[in-house]
Length: 186
Image (cartoon, rainbow, N blue to C red):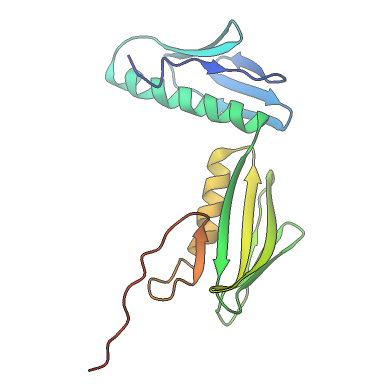
């Protein structure tokens, strides 16, 4: 039995589950998410909790059991609380701003980097001044779909990953970068 798959999912208030054929729909205060589940896996609401069952103990069914439970749990969390990823923009002259649904960043290139945000994803910029690292802007990506939020945050970070010598660039909040030692003079 899958350790993750057999854990029931608690359902917070205001969240409803609807299962038709192989389509699971979760509605909550923040929105609606749908997910298609593989054949042989069933999602059932029992006593205020969501339980995921599998048809048999074949290898593919065991693999999908924990996966479907995690996906449904992420859907329930997303429609009730939402997901958020934060990135720090570190570097002199680097800046970010939001124009409508477009994130515009100056990252030391000869051009500004523009990223359109898909529906359901919001981006906020908070600016603060740190003493030792120059100006820092914190980019916050929020949404109800965990996969989208994580992918957008990874795409933003990929525009200027942290430099391994000076530490400049985009990094996740709390991410530690080991700085390399520069050249030594003889």
